[in-house]
Length: 199
Length: 261
Image (cartoon, rainbow over all chains, first blue to last red; front, side, top):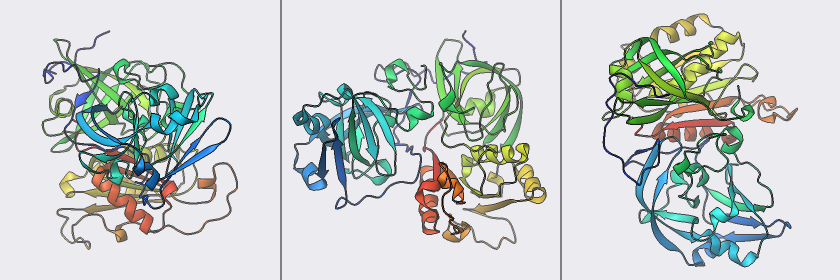
């Protein structure tokens, strides 16, 4: 079924191969959060990695800063339809936090200050596909955008790139996170337009 | 209808414009008929898809303004400068024209009459839309929950649902409606125009009784707070609410980015 909206011409801007289906490009940086912005002091910041056997590794801000970080430029895609092209971040690859563990986990449930969580298959966090970022566009990451540190998983819709992260719970099974329990897709591939359950 | 209960994909549905109302010089309410619509909870939104003759299509999300009402629903759309979808919805679309939509979407920023306890709604600009759906749902459901709406608009000319809000404020017991203006107010306003201030918001009651059940955040009698508007408004409002004693975990937010179109 294709319903034509009479009188709608659209922008006809041509298709940019960097923009997934159903998305439009913005130059702004809109904000989406389910609750108040969290303000977390780096002095108090902790990041817990919990493996399937319950063993826990805790990272302080100092330890995070001591790890090799990288600057990278990626496109980001929000489920609310906007995409932002060529965003530059600095962060520590998640694989460098997990590689030493030798975990047998298949899934991760990412936890945040303020109670937010999101589920991601572990392999989507490894091999240079995800970072814990603390700089955006050359400056400190603003709390509104998830500072002091957020997850960035640019190949999935941006709700997976959880703000104000404070831990990764490694799991054998997949437990749904916050939006995933409220009707959003469990995986969230923007190129397959996996916005909501069943997409 | 909670999103968490739904199985299977959300299908695109054909929606026809039945009628429209002008809210302000740049905002319009669209009354749509959507055969197959499953109903919604107040506060949820829909994805709208427009397709042009040449097959080009564009999607945006809009909050539902109306209470659940069969296969009818209302969206109120603010035209965004240089936007792609909103100017069509506000200025071009005529009764009888069609679009596609799917939903309802969102299971967090919602209110239903099943939730007892006092509600504080804080809206900035077009952020009033999902809050209006909650207010309408309260009245439709005959709920007695105390509702307090604080609605921030640029000026009286920028207020959506002007007459209906006035009517609700006068006639509905347990509903308080406060409008505040950021740029210019009405003659005789006690409050001078300006951005939202702490005193514009009610303080938390502070009557916290022991939690009695799994829905503790409400069983404790705390006011649930819903804040919707542009990011800067939501940031300011949530900080002021926390200053006024509202715990962060009772505050639910929905933000409209500076773009949207």
